[in-house]
Length: 347
Image (cartoon, rainbow, N blue to C red; front, side, top):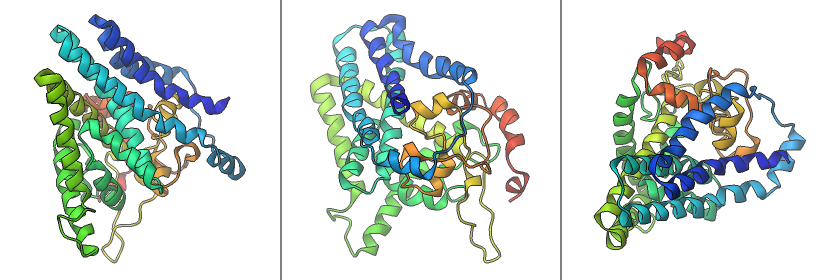
């Protein structure tokens, strides 16, 4: 029965569907649930730092149930996007309702789209990586697959990593630097990968080229079937989706830096270079993303067997709550700056 807890990850798209169907003030049900109800539940429920035994972990890895929970997000995400396109292109909506629908779908794109796409993007099977890329498409963030896997995991917690927030860097500044630098880096990484394999830019293996083609075709089809209003909805919800991802990126490594060794190279990525959270509700709805330290320790490790490392810096709140706090920089700095290891600040 404990395995069924991850079904709670579908609660966010469920309330989003309800909001889109009922409209009016209900369109804000998903934002209220994700960043109001869930943070309250995280305070009520106790922390859970328990790790699985080796035997338990081996047993969990044999269950395809956990994989199918991820796969189901593909039809759910695309169905919600289609419903949102239908509502915004065929119904007369108030500005209030437009904002609510865009935020609701954007949150689902970030949580059940990009987050799950991130998990599947680390898998070894080609079909799972394909599903991961497909989940990034509605957020117009397919380049994340390239930059995250071949850039972020190599440079995390260094100034070279766009997805690592500097000490005292406000979230809004981070949005600009991270979004722009990650996109540019993705093209640079793709070029290097092609050169290393003696392939040209027009090679069939140029993922960045295909990502651009697929995302462009996606938007063209939306204009053809749903018009300009559909395009406005699709682009706006995509922006909300990837800014949600970037807010998660912000809190995951905020202020943490790898020190340089005597050789001038950065020390290897350790458990101390990512913020960990054992708040149970956030762990469940985000498929254990909050155990980010162990994810960086071994990126191919599946979400259901991620561990908590005691030496990892611990967040005082869960990820959903922390994302809300990050929106208010002075409050975020007051809470988090004192938790950043002193030696990393002066590095």
